[in-house]
Length: 192
Image 1 (cartoon, one colour):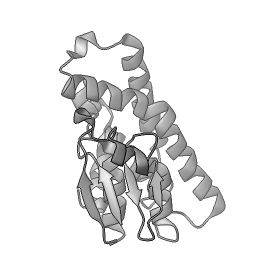
Image 2 (cartoon, rainbow, N blue to C red):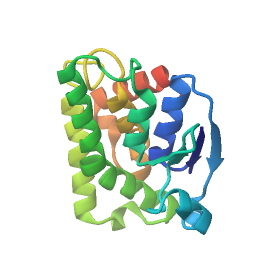
Image 3 (cartoon, helix red, strand yellow):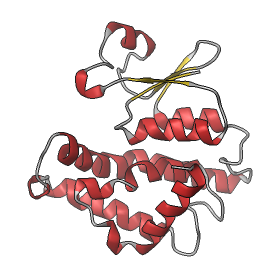
Image 4 (spheres, rainbow, N blue to C red):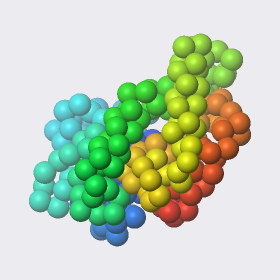
């Protein structure tokens, strides 16, 4: 399997972490989104959306979208709950991550860390929505070690990717004790 990813991207890293956690053999092909390497004709032939991550499975089929990729890779593993309701809760968190967390926390991080924008100049709505997402995560961890019960799932992999770096976007994670402890647990479980 080939994983085309940018090491600056949490969406790309969660694919790598899932493959590593599952002991899968893969080649990591670094693509720099800042240099437009996902917009080349060769890359667009693999993924017409021009986004990383993209994987080429062992049988040659391409797959894109980080959460779709990790779900495919982890099928049948302990990263996906066997209980139908727990699995649906995992998916609920994963869908929420892409719609209500990543667009704010990751975008703020990107603007500050890679575009050099001062935190004070970030869009107020972006910051407010990022803060709300992190608070939702803090509340969601009340009473459990992981997002879906007492063991790591793909929900944790998906959400730790940018949460662990939220401070790079100006978010104060120190005021979120459950999130901080959860990040440490997930990092340890993933060996990152």
